Image 1 (cartoon, rainbow, N blue to C red):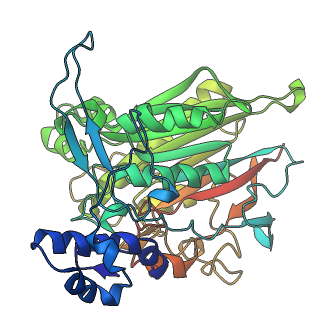
Image 2: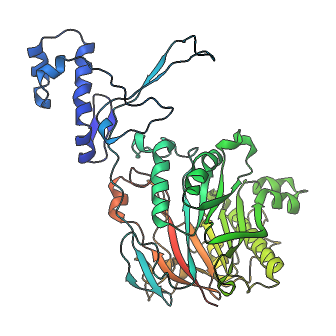
Image 3: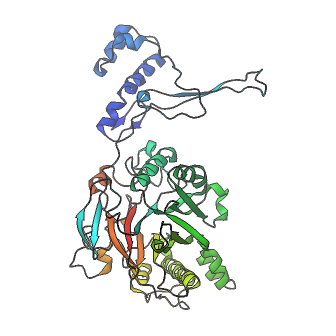
Length: 475
């Protein structure tokens, strides 16, 4: 719904009703600005709005609600304006400067949270039942962990031009950050692989807020120098529960695909220019903490955000091949083999099911049909890791049925949903010889996604859907 007096938009009827006092105030402001009018005329003009004529004639008064450096609107503020007043003083407090004020729009009630997603119990790669809404584990007695992957949609990309269908008040980071924090804390994942995390948001919001809930974080910023100051660049972050995992000594590797490109193609300017896309990845060796030494397990987690440009399909495949090669190298260094330590590779691969990067990871090798710049001719385009996609589980969603024989048809219908693109780009790959899937978070309710055209929306503050899997150690 739209309020024509100030071009405000409301996501639901309830949202509009909550802002009703502000609606009447808009008309009072309009009447006052147009000059003096009699009480009878004012009351008649507002008769349809259920506002008493005496209220119309009453001048608005400001009431102090706080004297602090920051203020979060309360339910009592809904339907009212807020005014921030800043008064400068000299260092000794003797001289007072000119006060500056800033008024907000009318405070509206936040939308109710989306319907809680349930965990699906998985046995032998088949969903067998559903858990209670809000429960993040299916079997706490088995030795294992939960892992979440989520592209947060960085503030630098969340513009009205990119997402014109999203309510203007629901797009700024100040609103979205609380939605995102509430959502990821609901899942209480043991490990979180996040993408499009802005550097200043990691340092000033995510790290300190998640620290309150016993999470530690590791961050890797993109290698994008032309974007200006460091804080306004995005990157990848891995958060982990420090009461359950520790990072092993020398167990952290940051991958810069630009650096690999310069090392391999430093003398070929044309190839180098095609490869310099600034994407990064993280690889961390964890040890699970446990009271008994025999219960301690090691785990390697990789987190990445592969290049998004559709016209650079060869670069996507090149980056994916470099990632698995680096992961294999880490596994060899840490244990001397590729089968000793369980592995999860998660992130936004910007590649659809059945694409070359997806086939490389799922099938262990691929032969691309095209290589326009000759990037792929010298690459093996294969790996020796027994990888499987966690979401490609029978019964996990409408696509994944027992009759599906093509792997790409087993993936979810989408993990990225906008007005101009709908498809699956996010994955959780795991080594099925050492890990099994014990549970999966069900997909979001399609009706709630379509209710606001697409993502992001007042309910979901990213254009991606978070994925979560519960993994169990096999041996």
